[in-house]
Image (cartoon, rainbow, N blue to C red):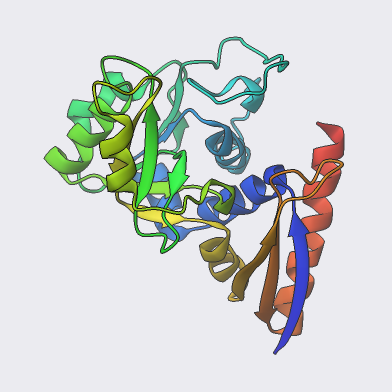
Length: 250
């Protein structure tokens, strides 16, 4: 066993998490035999792309449009189009183009899986937080209806860039107070997949976050110490080359 260090940009972290979830047997079983719902979001855009490629149904899907509410810099220019404010719903191997979580909530069962990203993550990685801008609670209404009411499995892909220092329940109490302005925050539990879980799922490797941040494109990046067999670490190195090639292509 050896340990190698690596720095992953925010986009590379998202690609790593997406690749791990797309490679999971239970995720593929839900997509092929039942229903897999990928709620729009930036990390989930990479996942939707991975899944649609596997199914040979990528078509004109544009992950850059695949989002609802986002936090952006003051000068950001975001792509919009047909895949904004929508989801990717895959039922028995077929992408139901144009279908959203709102359309199929009442049809979901315990055999199905919903994948929804998050905006905050506790250090112990047991609870995530979703920011709420919609006064009607947004996609969390159908998601929680399915998860709590119908026992649908919830998978939460979220990068360690979104770690917060305090208990998310306490933070939610603070920002949800009537005297507080801005977005609300909802604690959410489920199967949380960060880069740590992704390294284990894909390579059987143990990863530790050892540093974060940088400049020149490394803003928000995470530095990991990854321990595993030579073959596993080499496989990751090859995947990282592919991530970076894709990142350059945009």
